[in-house]
Image (cartoon, rainbow, N blue to C red; front, side, top):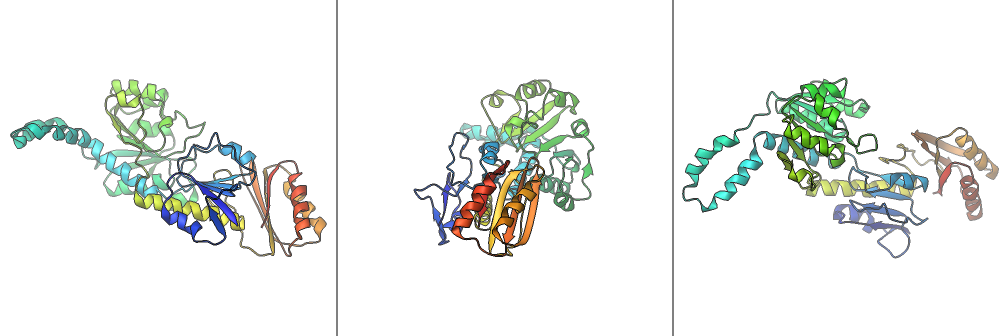
Length: 390
């Protein structure tokens, strides 16, 4: 019986994939094989030796200690693209709303409930909320993952001139991106020419304060920034100065905090990016499927700490090894298996940065004693952190 524990409110659509499977036990008392989470902070968790994988129903994994998990042989999954449409719609809605001063205007109109002649007051005051149309304006899209591509393509359909920057764009994203999106060769081009910039990049040590003092110095005056990725991507003290100086006309963020709420011309959205019924269902279903596929077959799709590795099952027993990406690892693994008089029916090895994953199908099953012996010998190889026999 495979055991999976959940944290946070996971959509029933995802939970049912586990609850309705007789091979799984959900939220039992024993140590779990997998975790299914949303925003639960796992950085202080002590993971049991039984834990093989964590699936995050969402794209960001800053609530999960990925490096520590990798060192312990735990695969960490996320669900890129599952909430892309929800975030895209919110970005475009706020792009229009901020340009038309909609939030300020609506907030003011709601204060008129005690006025005797509301229509007269509205007609006299509305000129103070005159905005601008987005048609014909230039939008910079930084990061062309699932969300960035959707935003860029739909902004084109709204009549905007779209410039995109992503030095690491995938082949799949490039196929989906409209040919009418112009390419920026460096980020400085985006800052200098765009009226609006939205960024859709992950938060890492390298991207923290991606938008900083140097960025603000290069920006076109009167720019509007939209941040629906992560708050820490923007150096907020520098942002405050840029807002005061009029370099940044408005800052729209899905990540309000005590500091930005005190700044003028900030549009604070209460982290609604993926908060739709459809998005939560999509993320939960995708996360549950990834978790089950890995636990049942060893195949990996959308892990943040390992490459995609998928191999049709072609043998009677499968051996999976998570290990460091160093020379002679595959040779050491196959040499160990050669001592058990079994043939290799199929094999695949893939790497991602400093880590790799090897999956081998054997043409016959090993006895329980042989399985335990294989696990022990493979784990003894320097650089191996996880061994499973399926």
